[in-house]
Image (cartoon, rainbow, N blue to C red; front, side, top):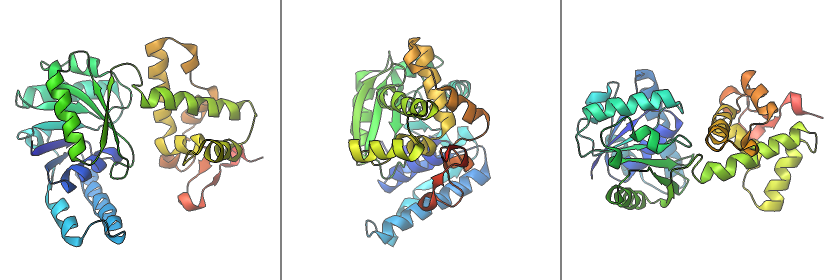
Length: 296
């Protein structure tokens, strides 16, 4: 396998393109927006510069990585030679189903179709294609160039051969793949999101403040980041979406999103991406402060 296509050039998409290109794969980075593609390549360049500063790579490595990336604004052109397509578009079920239906129509029969979804059913996505045995989940963690885990999710019909190939490919990227089965939230978010939701409930019920909750989890449980800060980093809208998937999928009230989370998202407070969530992010992460509405 040499030719990889990545659909979507946002935070996850450009990160996935980065790691494949840096490992020597030919990468087609695809997005409908030429401006987004330009921004993505610039972001990859900046991230490579950070690696150079840390003496993890050389200038030649940076050049080779960027030379391995070609951008496309038309999907059919970008995927025509792909042996693997990794979809990293917005976490929207209707959009993903359309993308996979289109991919199935234009990709070679042998092409493996992977999705970076963090919660949507692989089996449901595979059902809109004629190659359910070749559809699989590759859930990368953010930031992709740094985080080692890839959650490899096999749908109901994903073949053993495809699963084994993606596990081996993940190791080629220097990652640690973990195979899981296709149930709502998989493993990462099935465990993480209820913890974040419970932290939000603790704030909602005035058990403790934002900094106090995060400090307990950082110092008491050795988490590198508190759950409320992590929620801001993930995106509160994304957290809400995943909790709704869990709630709808299991029908268990323990997954019901906290009303405070719902209100914050409806009010446009989505965390880092909007500049405000449980913290204010206008001046960067080094200067983050508890958002005004949560100050004592």
